[in-house]
Length: 164
Image (cartoon, rainbow, N blue to C red; front, side, top):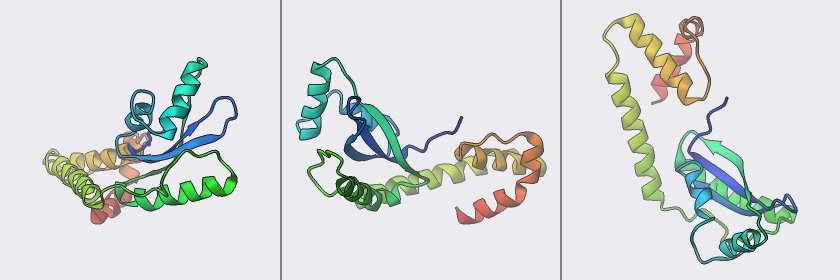
């Protein structure tokens, strides 16, 4: 099963028309898209209330996911423009991308620090440390990395570490 990054662009899908009626971005995975069921005072929330009144609920479609949240604002703008161009009945009131850029950079930096702290806490045994690093990287990418595969992917792990 592929793990989806918490940094994603999502669409809320009308179960009757199967069209996306709202495009949003999240840095908290599915938590943000689920919030539309409970609160808010917007055209999107009104759309959701109408669905709920009819005994229906929207679906959540992951349109795009990212390794970091830095790309979210531009991607959200692109998806909203694309949806409008396709004729989706979007309830978005803005063109998107209004996330606080400083907050996004802080979150990305926190994730980077957490990853570095995890790497520094690995066992001192060289082979075990390399295998653990490789497992961490592949786990983050949603792939399962067996021991034999881990040994074969040390070059990838080294490249990934240089990018951190």
